[in-house]
Image (cartoon, rainbow, N blue to C red; front, side, top):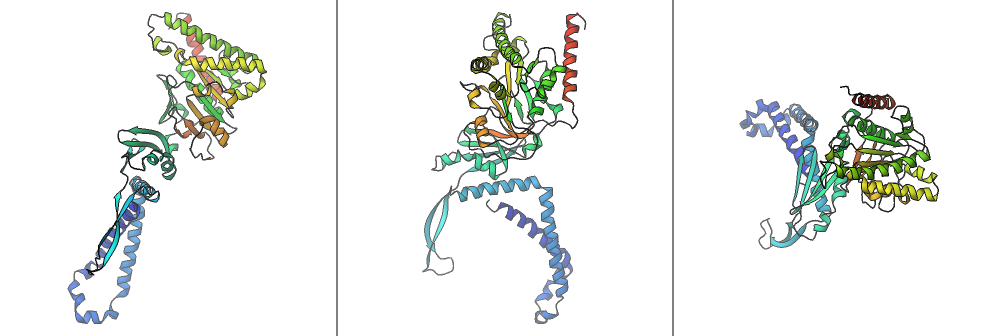
Length: 451
């Protein structure tokens, strides 16, 4: 399979080449017996070489065009052959094979001549499959001396096949790598971002299941698309009926939502932010107690089981806020954050935390480990990626595409990520204000007893 593409191309070319020659020379081919007559062979210089050469040239052109057309028309099939070829070459170049030498008699009729040849006694057993847009590569764990290396091939396969590793799983007798080819095709529009059953859809193949994997950590510098991503989630969460608290200590884009959001839900001043964190902790602890008193409460179930709505605390520029505080205030803010991330899931309190750089000193005491969904947008340094994802062998590549980055969706596998597309001219303030006003009107109607 190491020459699969070449063989496939030659098979097509030779077949078309011969068919074209036959069609062009068919009149002469029907008189093939005359070719071997002595007079014809003697007068070879009298042959119509222009006619013969023209036929060969036409056949060459037709064969080449046919290969090109097959390549473009059946690109997916070509891609599969190409991938299998690269995998086979990887096994060979890394010497994941075993050979042995043996002696045999020469095949050229010299019975007294003995030659030494080699044969392959071991070649890795691997399977390639495409299913529902994903590429699955399974390599047999056969207890060979290469088995440990097989377990570590995820990054090499990812870079070599230009795919994105989304999952690695050990099955019975196999290590299975799951890849996504051309991740950008799975980018969705802001209109497709929906919240349902404790999950928010962010790409065709990626959902943030906040009920199971609470709290999101976002990093990204200027121009990376961080603000639009946060606003997109705010829009979707509001439509779902969730309660939101928005904190923007830099008084930037998110702070503008104060003009359209319900009163006392958007804060940009230090005192208001600290108050929100304190009241969120108090509300969370109070809700936990009240849940246990509800008639439909069941041990092990969460807020949604008893019919409560989730509460999201969207905290932008978290590190910048911490830098504003004195020592005592920092300790108090960290304590609030720690309680929210440690105890929030059951009661339905979730944090979306954003910063240009998630400085470890402000996410200490196990706080960072509780952020199960992590997104790094735009260009980050190696240190920045390390702060987000910890030690990893992932090769990070920067592309000048707004809203593009990397994400760990809770599987400890870092994959390429694209935020939902926002149409040019989309007015977040107007749209979010419309949703917020609709909720206020609905609540008022219910309070007044109207339908």
